[in-house]
Image (cartoon, rainbow, N blue to C red; front, side, top):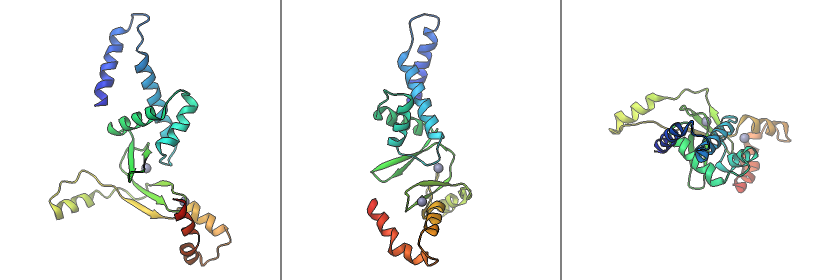
Length: 179
Ligand SMILES: [Zn+2]
Ligand SMILES: [Zn+2]
């Protein structure tokens, strides 16, 4: 839908070309903002929230609003240029890698990481179709646990080889409270 609008504006711009002083400022601004948003998002693999993206975009486009960033992210997600990962009603995270892949959510640092080591198991979709009679267009798969960096931090800390047990009783609880 938003694509249609963009095309309209594009053709307006084409027509006005050559006529000096007739500049489609809004279109230029939107395109630039969207490019910066996409830039920021593609420069990280941390699957940031809209707010994080907004803070970074603001460094380059000082008068941009959070609403504009949201709107552009939605548009980019609708056109399939980015992925929107919905985590309940509280917040979405955005992913500059638009091709299907799996994710790992660290329960300690709350980062969302790509699991590119495991190819997307499209046979799962056929299996669900076979068993249910549904037509499956895709699926999301997320793993939960402790990421490599958090495990390393844990090991280099005072925690002994018995970390497995300590983890459940001690630190893990502290992190739950953080949420
Ligand atoms: Zn972590
Ligand atoms: Zn991802």
